[in-house]
Image 1 (cartoon, rainbow, N blue to C red):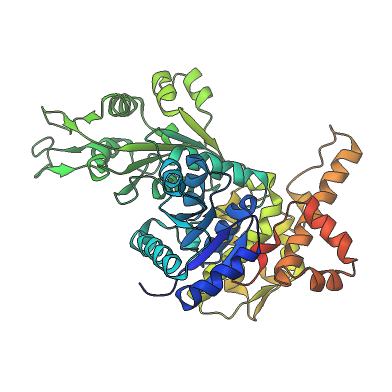
Image 2 (cartoon, rainbow, N blue to C red):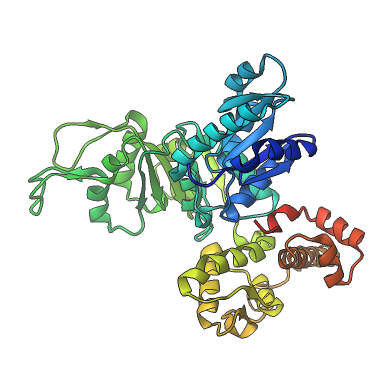
Length: 454
């Protein structure tokens, strides 16, 4: 193995971190502590910062559930979970809940190094299933936890998943996360954009053909369905699929069989299907443009992604994420964004959602001539008023409070980012009492750990 592993200690007692760090010594590159309720946020923050944890050392009391272990594995991008157990039942508990290994408490240095090292090596071997920084779902509100909870719930199964959301909300990213967290993670993840392929070609792309099936068919051709065998087939924009093909996809879902164009033999395929659409499938069914039986078949486990305008508190996180993503590619030493420029991003509704935000940040970085993105670099309308009208059907106080809450959360997020989560420095810079700032941070559900330097 290359670099020593990063270890996340999940325990009621913070002092356990110091014990583990001392016993591991140079066998770990870093040892971080969190209570059980903060483990998910720590794992997500590690991946977002391109510093994923390799092993989770989890206190076995109270015994974790298989669902909670799967959630940790999903949030950590394939991280291995080792139980820290007292007494003779530790191994049985590990087997029941699905942990990778168990280590006895009180800890022995040799056993701890061996078991955590073995788990870290297994994580490294499965590294391709771990998301890259650019593949991470980024968000701060309850929606992101609920989404990860549902992904952890369904990833280990072969249940068909339907992802609903506007264009640019990250539907393909969710599909990839499901695949990477599933038992099929070593097999292909094949994407078919039903709206991008002309209707006459879509059937051939999906199912393939045999030689002589039509004029230009000079040889057999495998389709994308066969290419996804043992893996995941992602049917993006399935609402655009022609009705005749819908019937053929329904057959695949029902019997795991398909037939190439011009063939007289059925072929078996082992594939999980995940679909996505920005269309209202209920309306398409009512209009006769989407098969009702297929709708029932794909809508077994729906996931709904909120548009960016419903989660404006995530804009600051996303802007900084995209700055880090593109600075190396552009070869520019951009390391900050001015408050005025950030306010421009935060004050726009982004009808194209995260994809539009990413494009606008990229554009601003191209325009930037210094190390700081300025207001003049941002090609967006000056204020939200130009793209959205106030909701006058709701009480004035309610709308006003909503705007104040949105501003506070965006301000606090940027403040903590600039000061790397240091509350004392942030309070001095903001001219606030530290206790009042802490109360605001708590009220808006911000996790200071995600802003700390990796």
